[in-house]
Structures are given as structure tokens and as C-alpha cells.
Length: 230
Image 1 (cartoon, rainbow, N blue to C red):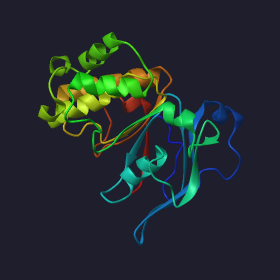
Image 2: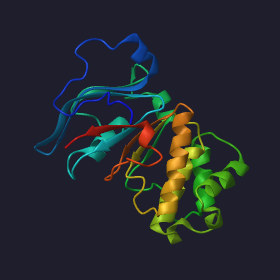
Image 3: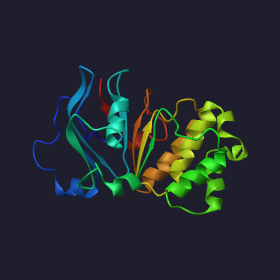
């Protein structure tokens, strides 16, 4: 297991400036985040870093703020206090960060009226990528090539989750932010996604994910750092 370099809520990791060696490998830096939902504080003074080759596994009970944290980290929500930096620059309004990060949330973001391959083609266009062969390759890697010409609305929940994950493979993105990526996925599908995550980490990418079960003993075990929101 990777040594934990992030502390729990209510705690500040950095009493002094970051060492130069850590700054060289740090891709995402979170400083003193505070998040409030309604009248309830989910977390505060949350400070941690995510480095190249690291999988940060965010744990916590239901309602502890896991999904809210991920939405803040990908720029979909503003923190009530604190800042998130990508390679020393705030992520707010940072087009480079948006271009090099991919997010899969509880909803898959797919267009139900399009076929599986049309969804990938549409996303490929948005990402300014080209290559028809890459579309088939992504579907094959996720084990859903046979679904290429099926309308997405007819796919099972697990197939849609795989299709959503296939989008991450279309564009070179350094940071993957995944909210419960294994939900609705069978055992073989989980192994496939884990192997793709490992390949991403070994290539110098980073992953932040929530998952209600431990990653101990799995393919991601050697890369994981745990952050428990309680």
C-alpha cells in the first residue's frame, strides 16, 4: 500500500511549505477545503496532494461528502472555502485542467438516443480527437464491441457504465475522477476496468475514486492511498 500523504478532515497536512521533491511529482494539490450542504458541514480544513501514479481512494459513510468532494475536484462545484490546484494553477477557469481530466459520476452522461459507437464518436468530436479505429478499440477493451450499433438506451446498466468508461480512453487525460466506477459491473468487468486503471497509473496518470469496498488485494492495491471522510 502506498504511504498515506493525506490526512483526515479537520487536519492540515502542511504546516510548512511542500518539499521541492514532492512538488516535482504533485499534479493535484488540495488546500483547506470546506464543504457545506444546507446547514450541515461535510468537511473542513481538508488538505492533501495527489501525485503521478497514485490512486486516491476516498472512503466514508453515506452522506460524508465523498461525491461532493469529487465534484469539487473536477470543477463541477465550488468549495465553500479552500482551493484546488492543478500543476500549481487553480482549477477554476483552467482550460488545461479541463482538457486533461476525465470524470465519471453516478450518471453516465451518455445520450440514450445514440448508439454506443455514436456516443463515442460524439465525445471524440468534443475532445478534438480523430480515428474511427480507436472507437472500436475502446469498445473492445471494455468488452462491449458487440454493442457498438445498439441504441444506448437499450443497454444494461453495466454496459452503460463500461461505455462511459470507454470515453476516458479516447483522449489523453492525466487525471481520472471516478465516482463508484464498479457499481453495476460484474466480476470480469471490474477486472477489466482495474487493469485499465493500472495501465493509466503506470503511464504516469493519477486516479481519484470513491468505492464503498476496500481495494485491498485487488489490482489497484499497490497504488492506493486512502482518504477517509468518516
